[in-house]
Length: 171
Image 1 (cartoon, rainbow, N blue to C red):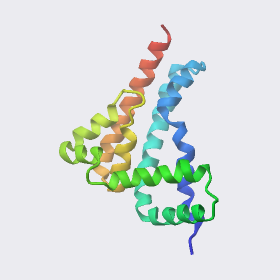
Image 2 (image 1 turned 180 degrees about the vertical axis):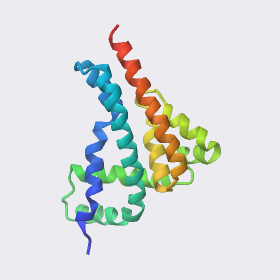
Image 3 (image 1 turned 180 degrees about the horizontal axis):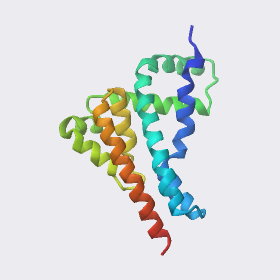
């Protein structure tokens, strides 16, 4: 019997996605939130987000089959909703992409190791997802050592992005 109650992390992940710190920073600054408050809160939120992502993708290794069953059952019953299409389909798509041996992020991390993780964590280009895919890869393969480097790089990234957006918007 499929226990839907144990799939609560999928719902939390779905809620967390639009709360990405790369969106929170400019939105907060344009809404009048002080730079100092963002310099304190955003790195904490970003760290929590990346830790949850690492845990979530590791958890998903054991639960991907259950998600597929839910997805197939809801489609057969014609009861597929936004949660199915946006969250479950997206999660399974990312998961299958991560475990694909030809995945670009996976190949770069295998080839360049910690350097690739640092580059992914420090990436300043908005709209170019690198920290999320890197956390997904490291979570699925439970690479805690490299993940610690990603957390530190992400922390540095968020501090510089808050500072950069602050100076950009005050002009």
